[in-house]
Length: 217
Image 1 (cartoon, helix red, strand yellow):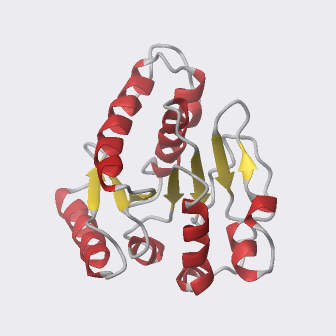
Image 2 (cartoon, one colour):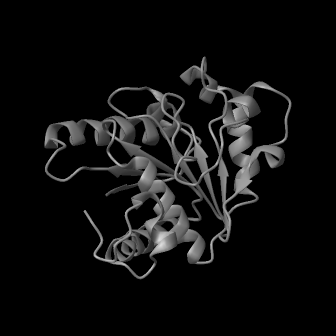
């Protein structure tokens, strides 16, 4: 969808055109999500799409910017080891990131990057060339999430497409809530039902998580 305000870069439309129509739609989504998360004290949010090019990365960047404009200290984590993309629209160069943090004895504070002019931070994917999904199952990642929850109001996690990769299923065990991106007129009902069913069953079966929230966009 094209915003009549004239902004072309959809990934940063909330930040650059906060009064536009698309930004307003993200504001509505933000309000609905916060209404559910705040009531339960939730902080971690997984953004998952069924297939590639579904808009998950642009959604997470706009939602995170909307949270920041709402006065929340937000962190974006790029856990898409196959096609990391959160830094492209922000103009952040590739370097150390989540993979390096999980593999080496480095501090999260040395790697997490602040987005200019917003109360918003980003943890890039890092050196993902040979990174396997199992890296997200290591105790260090769970410990990292707990550490970051103490520092940020909201943590949004980007991941690989749910129908093509296992990362979303791994992460569903660790987060408080899940947003599923649906492409109107393109994603089939059966495919979406399968994604929702798979992630919900994994999320609910994890004994360490609280009552789940799911939200489709």
